[in-house]
Picture (cartoon, rainbow, N blue to C red):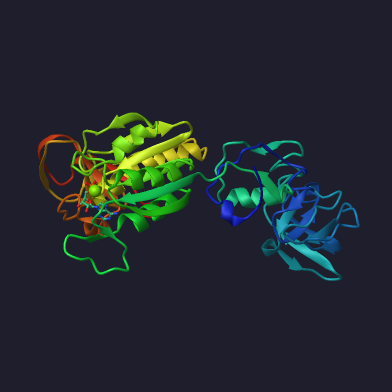
Length: 383
Ligand code: AMP
Ligand code: MG
C-alpha cells in the first residue's frame, strides 16, 4: 500500500524494492576541507603550490588543476579536473602571493576523495522488500528521491476485556469488583508491537453480549480477549468462539503464569484468549501475540526474543510448570545479568513495574547459585 514517507512509518516493513535514481555521490567528492592536488606533484609530501580557485559545497569547479597548482576545496564539494587527492587543511599553511605550502606525507591517489557512485549506482537496488524502516532507511529513501513507498500495513488488533467484576478505571470498585487494568495494558502492548489497537471495552460474562462483541472483534486482523478462558463457571469465551466458527489450535499451555491461554483462527483473523490475571495476560501477549503481530507486519524476525544471562544472586524456586519469572535484566559490561524481582503470583502486576524481562525456569526444584547461566525472555527494547 503506497504511503507518503513520514516518521509514522517507523518500524514498518517495506513491500517493494527501492532502486536508486542517481549515482551517490553524484560526483567525485571531497571528504575534507583542504586542497585538491595532483598527487604526482607531491612525491615528498612537501610542496608550494599556486591556488587556482576556491570551491565550496554546492559550487562546481571552473578550473582544471594544472601541474604546480592546487584548488582550495571544502567538504562535500566536487573534485576539480586534474586533481586526484585532497590534502587536509591542517597540513597546509598560507604561502606568499596566494600560494599554499603543503607539508604532509606524500598523498596517495584518491586520498580523501569519495569517487562518484561509491555508495550506490543509478539503477541499483538499495533497499529490498522486507526491510524494516529505521532512521537510516528514511535518510536513504530521501537520498534516492522517494516520497512515497509501499509498506506492509500495521495489523489492526481488536481488544475485548471480559468479566462481570471488571469496572472502568474511573470508577470506585464496589465489593468484589476490580478495575480494568488489562484494557490499557493490552492497548499499550499492541502499540508497542507496532500494530493499531482497536479497543472494544468490557463485555459482561453473558453469552449474547460476548457473541455480539466478539463478532465485532473478528473483523480485525487479530482479536485479543482478556479473561473468561479458564475452567470457571463463567469462563464462556471458548464456547462462544466455537459457536462463531473460530477453529481452536491450542487451549491451555504447560506454563506459569498463563496456563489457560487460547489460540484459534477464523478465516484470516487470529484469535488469542488471554487469561484475565494481568501478569498472565502480559506474559502470554509477549510470548504469543507479539510474535504473531510481527509476522503479520512482515518482520523476518518475529520473536519472542531470548538472551542468555548470569544470575545476579542465588535463586531458590520450586515449580510444577515451566515458569516465566518477572526479573530485571541489565547489560553488565561482559554480558547480561538478571535479577528476579519480588513476585506474588499472576495477579501481582505491580511486580512487573520493577521488571523488564522474564527469567525462564524449567519444571522442578531449583537452587541456582549467583553466576549461573540462565535463559531470559526480553520484553522491553530499551534496557
Ligand atoms: P479470568 O481469566 O476471567 O478467570 O480472570 C482471572 C483473574 O483476573 C480474576 O481475578 C479477574 O478478576 C482478573 N481480571 C480479569 N480481567 C481483568 C482485567 N481486565 N483487569 C484486571 N484484572 C482482571
Ligand atoms: Mg472472568
